[in-house]
Length: 330
Image (cartoon, rainbow, N blue to C red; front, side, top):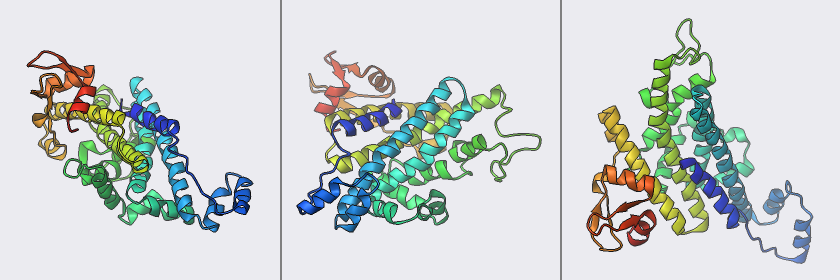
């Protein structure tokens, strides 16, 4: 479901011409010059003729769908590999979209004009991710992105950072598993290759069970967060959140709350409870028919997520996801 929402964002942008910009040229001569340009010449012409702001917006409108589309395709293939039990291949495919693509989307969200200008003016070596990590500029960008999507106090930037970029975060480190999936031999102290081994290729049933647990305990966290970033960027361009996105947002948050509660209960890990707080205990919705408050705890929330509707415990009428979003301040 989460990856389908990335696809929905791409299609929404195309259908609503979000990726197009309107440029008012100053005179007929400029109009003739512009009409004669090929696609590779447009950026330089805009920069050299006083349309820098249009240039930066055009870069943003080009980068957003390209990064999202690339992210979607890699994740889609990774999920297909999971269905076939190809865990090492899935790990490899998850690495690029959730480590690289997502970072540049975060950067675009918090500093759109600055990044668009840098993308045009600078060599790629100036803003390559590894350099940003060395200069300790990644965590501040993630922190700002978390604030921009309204998740401060709910999503912990340090946890998101460490899962994607650090190797010493224990079981929930994605970075360590990504490196092992991509390289037969790793030398990091936290995940060095044992003697007479190659990484992951001799995995037995117990190893694979651990890898399954790891994937389904970590990937949803980053993917859910990535959708929030992608949506926030879309709304940066179009303004208010359309009703269809409000419905998707509530459905997604509900599913994530159910999943995360199940994870905490299954793992019995106090650190998880601290790192990924859950608000299902405080969730209630107002029945659109009888106007009474319906408590939505774990099993009711699961039913609402899976069936997109539940029955009011007071009037026994059906309450849909759509009616909840329309009739509640969500």
